[in-house]
Image (cartoon, rainbow, N blue to C red; front, side, top):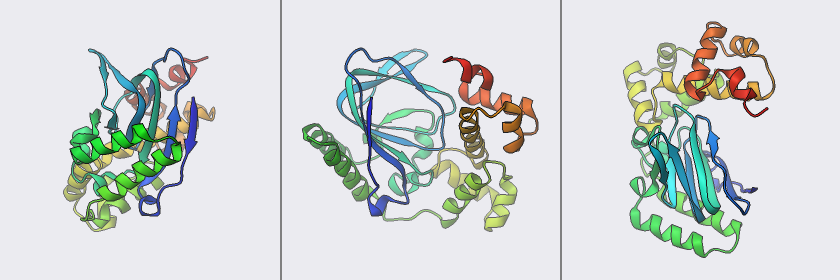
Length: 257
């Protein structure tokens, strides 16, 4: 699999965590699993197709789609050699690109035409298919996103709350966070659910899990992870890790060995 990364457009620098073009190797495609992260991901296929593997069977995805914040792992598989432009959004970016729709895509992968103007998405798909270079494809996607920016900015406290939860690695109490920002807790929770896709508490748990995965990938012991991230005890850490990954941490990280 080949990956080429691109620098975000200046207008998108505060909204994108990463943007890359990915092409699969020839030959039969094997299923792969992604873990929940605190980011919505947009995908634009310019060759091949992706399907998501669900308990009731597989489902072929549209050429352009969005995968919302996940509660559990999600499995995908390519149909033919798949080429994609992939965009990982910062947690507050949905409020600028498709305001109020984040909750509707949480836990799911949806057609991008549900979030953006249908004709503009179809036009982009055609132009991506005709493009010859990855740089052209990255530019087309970024131009589309710049033109799709909402003219109405979300509440200023939303980004500040997200950043505080990220800095605190998910360990901040929601009531204390709301008080520090000078906003009612209910208002904060409504804004998070609509614009991020989860409640502040749910988002904090996801941030903490994501950090735990990174620590475990560095071979840090579970008991040390639990202590660093403020879990009540190791049992609490194991329970929460299992709820997001489907396996206890030691079992998850030993499965490929």
